[in-house]
Length: 338
Image 1: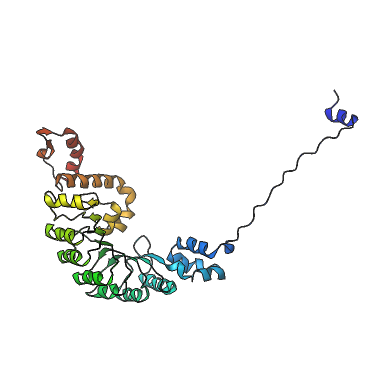
Image 2: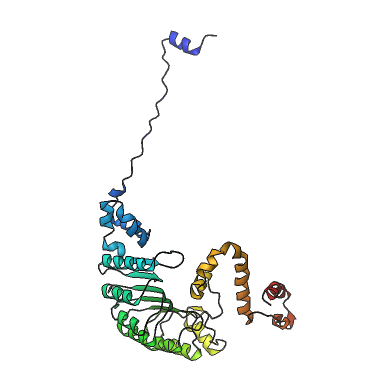
């Protein structure tokens, strides 16, 4: 049988050529052509250390962008076990960041970095600061007071395992009129009652207050409720000296929109920071995942029943009958911690 191609040629027809597929080569992306404000936004996400040690060394254009004060409006520097490098080097980096901000720094977070001289350095060059978060800083008397006098626009102050005095709170009330959020979170019982009274007297405009681990009693809490009448959120977790079973607890519930009670669950991330359990715990996290689950649940149950180790059968009587389900849940923990 004659082929189709031959018959087509005999009839004077031509066989069409196959269509060509054109492949368009994607354009090469030139990062240097990105708008500078977009590059600033990208570089802010890689962190202070990488900017100073890597990004600014890429090319002249990036070096100029890395000197832009807008890049240094928000600074976060962590020198804990998660980001281990020399503390002196960290402090030098912070000075570079503050200098490059040219007074435009508005948000600063420092974890195990600050010392007395560095606090004064920051305060003298950061009058626009609105948010300050400090972890692990133990100061001499009066150091904070001098700094607060130079932060007139401060709106949020967050201190975790960081010393502060009654006088410091009073000075903050005088020189930081915009302060609305205060977090003074310490290890259990570390916060002095005088500080709570200073908060009540000196910071009447507060809307958010955290006092995790405070040793305050009902009298100090009553003073805070009276003095800080604009409070919307109040965190009292680990404030174990409080008794909120009667009128004071009812007032807290009515006056505060977002209230966290002394026995409510404390997230492991905050608990580790407060108790200093970070590096050792993380090193063995794979081995202790199951134990951590048991431990968290045990803590919740201990808070619920008001015990810290041993449970009696009488603890499970509800309306004259045993709560068998709760009793079965708690049996492993009684064996584990008994």
